[in-house]
Image (cartoon, rainbow, N blue to C red; front, side):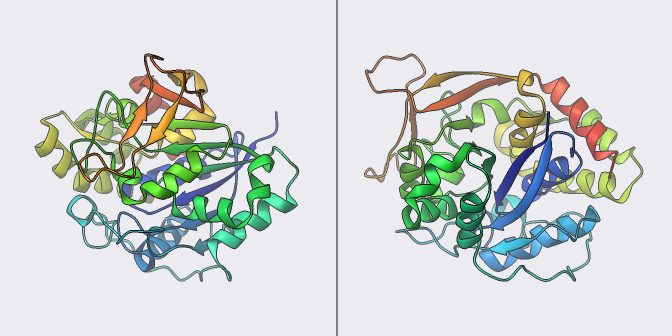
Length: 313
């Protein structure tokens, strides 16, 4: 089977960086057409910088990196330096990127790629707020039928929220964009906090990254050392959730995950529950299913895959 063609839309973020590395280390399953960056964990100039740093760390300066939307569709930008540090990639001491940004806007790249690639071949993998994806769908509604799937990290049901009591960060930052994406009719798979909070970077798992003895292994260990300080204190867990790498892992080893095909709606009106993913997990409404909402992960299998693939870089 030929590798799946994907675009990763991202706001790096240490866990975004690990997701990009996992995709680049898996050419049998994934062909990364490009990276599109969006404001989220940190502002756009930093997410565009960080994506290029990760490509250079992996030795893949051939991957085009595009800068995208610098603010949500209708709201002021909310960022997460309290989790990821002032650069978004705090932890390892990585050099400034030398590769240039690709010319043009991320949204135009998404639209042009979907219009020129064969129908049903490209999967979008958003790891941050959905601003770029929604903007592309608004500007070019025809691309919806050309997409194979959107596999996104965002939302929560049983785990409720991580930025507010009701909302996960990526959806909270731009709920109007999420509403557009979930209403697009495109096949969607959601990797929510319910899954990622089971993918914990415990000390033995982080030691395995460091033991690779490579620049990538050391950088990943130092990234997770940095951002886990926040989640360990917040949740009292044995390690930090490694959110975003679950998206490429879903494409590489789908049997590591289980979930349900259900209806998911996005709350945009209430300030109390803004950005909540109202997931009809128990199918108590008559609303039509619009997403595969994942609920569980084989965490040991996930970290085995991740460590084996990072060792390739």
